[in-house]
Length: 327
Picture 1: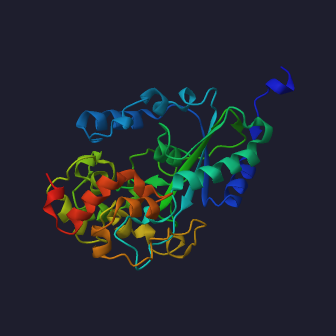
Picture 2: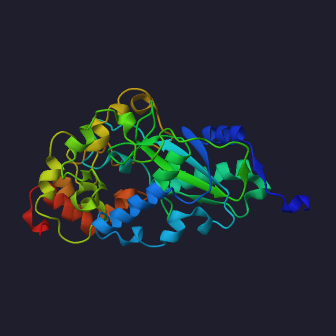
Picture 3: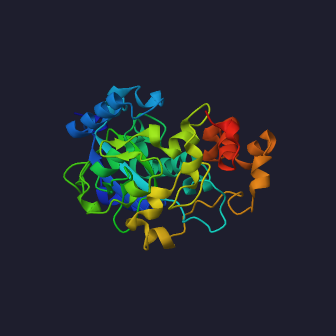
């Protein structure tokens, strides 16, 4: 075999140093293998139970989602990284905290590509970077790579850091000289949550079921992904206690999680600044009269555009008591 044909070997130490230099606060490395039987069974059950609602994109390309080698030819390694977003400012508008920063798809993708170039160099060909843009089971890979564990909220929780993170992956044909082990023996183990059920108790729609998250009862799903009128109960969910009233997304499970108190989540300053509207002092009068032109300018480069103008105005009307937004 010629040197050119040899499989590149990555130094795990170098990979993690490069991740830290790029701004990622956690990095783990796993062998590129099919999802565990347990995780595949969970996905099959979620489909059968209808937990994905009308998010049909979660049902497509299942063979690639199950096996990263179907997504990246000759894949041997999955590098998973986490990037925190800053704590919520006191005067933020009724928008989920993650969406107050510039669109993570673009920001993280650039950082991830820079990291890939540093660790892979000339062997970069054939490797791919992903940030919530392909059929990659991101939380599974973060668990499998030992970054954190999956809590009862369904969120990835990193001990001493919390759950307010964006995730990304580099899937590469290169091998690693060391791989990380998961923090829990199986992905559905909630033993690191102990006896805590605060996220389930705080979920306004009761979406955090024993069988996983049911999008049909999820405020984030209805205010971001759902198209068409909102169910009548959605307005109540927006204002339910405990938690911050929001018309885009939902922060309740993260707000009540003990892992998000103290440490990194309270003190770290992310390199991702808050968007200009986060502290603009926008009030009800402003939001109710928001024009399409204002929307385009205000949310340029923002994840809020996922809901579209019509969807956001539907949410705002429900939030401020206009019943025309409901079914």
